[in-house]
Amino acid sequence: MGGASVSEEAQEPRKKTRRFPSITRDTARPEGGGRAAAGDAPAPARQWPMLTVLGLTGVGLLLTAFDLFRVGTVLIGVALLAGAVLRWVLPSVGMLAVRSRFTDMVTYGLLGLVIVLLALMAQPDGLEIPFLEGILHFTVTN
Image (cartoon, rainbow, N blue to C red; front, side, top):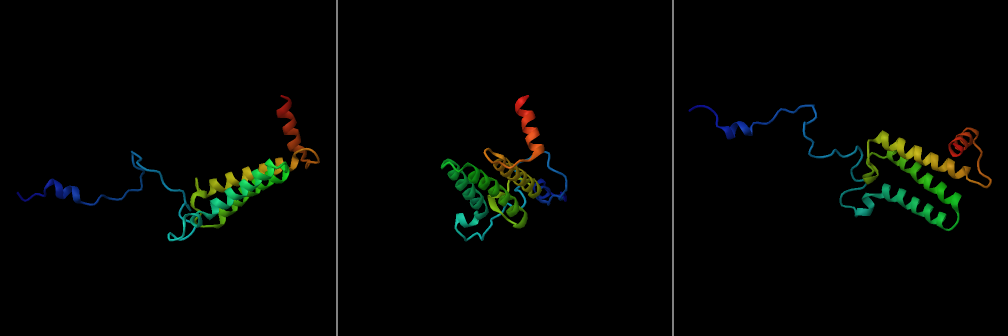
């Protein structure tokens, strides 16, 4: 018989399609989720953006534990803001990339900004932001 065998037909390359597969077998890496340093560098050097954010957060928590509440919590917020800036500036940030670049920047940026503002508003002698004080008063009293 002159026809092709079944195994030869199975060997033909499949056509690439832009449609998503019906069954997902793996998750896509977030954009920028590669190594932040060369592959031959030691593991901590490859993840320096994540270690920077975690280190600043750890120092902030330590300062908060030593009764420097405002300084510690502002440092935690600054660490998140630094994470947003790193995510924006660097093409590859390692494990700091969790979602898409835009989502990570917005998440880190908003959380960092809220933590810094709330830390600065803490009593005594806190920063007074009228609309935030009204929202806080409304949520606490109701």
